[in-house]
Length: 98
Image (cartoon, rainbow, N blue to C red; front, side, top):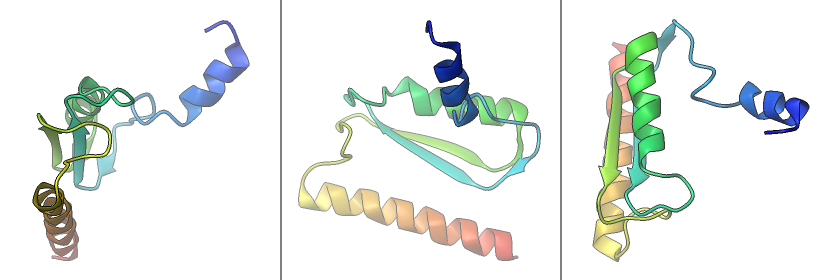
């Protein structure tokens, strides 16, 4: 907070601070409730700002109430999460190609 150059450098690549009023692709932001590195409100706040400022999308947010930074634990819960991401990616690509 005291080093202005460091602040400007970090702000230059901050996803939240660099949202502009333009079309964005479909986005699925995911987080975990007990993630100590990326707190659950950060993806929610980012998606809310995208919805407010940007166009196109859609902008979706999923907070896993049982996960931390690494996502779901357990083989089947992890596979369900991977399947969700892949299904969203396939849907987004098909949507943009139409």
